[in-house]
Length: 311
Image (cartoon, rainbow, N blue to C red; front, side):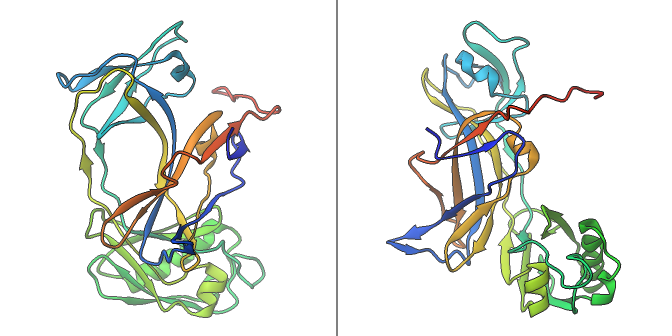
C-alpha cells in the first residue's frame, strides 16, 4: 500500500516532509536537500567486472518500468541503461548497461521559498523595488535591485525572469549566473559546477521576500563522482532511479522540505519508493526515511491516454 498517490502526468499534490531529530524539528538552514524516487528489483543473474558494458538481467516486471537512460544503483555501483528489450519478454528482461557511470558535477542553486506574488497589476508586477545581496562563486557580494518599473510590463513568468536576470547581470559583472523558474517559483544558480560553485542570497528586503519569494539562503555545488564496476551476486537489490533532483526547504527552522513535480516526473504509472536526501554543511549525508516506509503510487487516470508522435 502506497503512503501517497497522484494521477499520471499530475504535478499535485507536492511531496512534503517535516524532518525531526530527537522529537524536535531539525533546523535545515545549512542543509542541501534532494528528492529521490526509485523502483526496486533484484538481479536475476550475477554481474562481474570484466567489461565496461554488461547485460543487466532483471525479472519480467522490469519491462514496464525500466527505460533507456535510467540510472541503476547496485550496492556501491551506478550503471546506466543503454538499451532495453524490444518486446515484453516472457521471462527475464535483459538490458545493456554501461559501467563506471559518472555522476555529473552540480552547480550551486537556490530556490525561492514561495511562488511569485507581485502586488502590482498582476502577480508578475512588483509593488516596489526588490533588493537582495547576491554572491556567485568566489566573487564578492553585490546588491541586486529588481525595480518596480522593470516589472511593470511583465505579463508572464518568462517576462519576470528576464527582468530579474537583467538585474543580476547588471550587478554581477565578473561572474555569471542563471535565473529561471519552475511552477512560478524563481531559482538562481551559478553557471559553474563543483564544490567551488556557490550561490548566497543575503539581506533580501520585504518586497523581495513577500513578492518574489526570495529569502536568505546558501547553496554549494557538488563534484562529479565516478563509480567503479564491481561484482554483484544473484538476488542483489537493484534500485532503478527515476528522480534524483533538488528539493526545496520551505521552512528551514521548522524542518519542512518539499518537492514539486515536473510533468515528466509522473509519466509512468506504478508504485515507487521515495525519500529525501539531506547533506549537512560538514558534507555528511543521510536519507529520510531510511526504512523504505515512504512509497508513492502514480495512478493511471481513466481519462489518460498516450499521445503518439504527430498528434
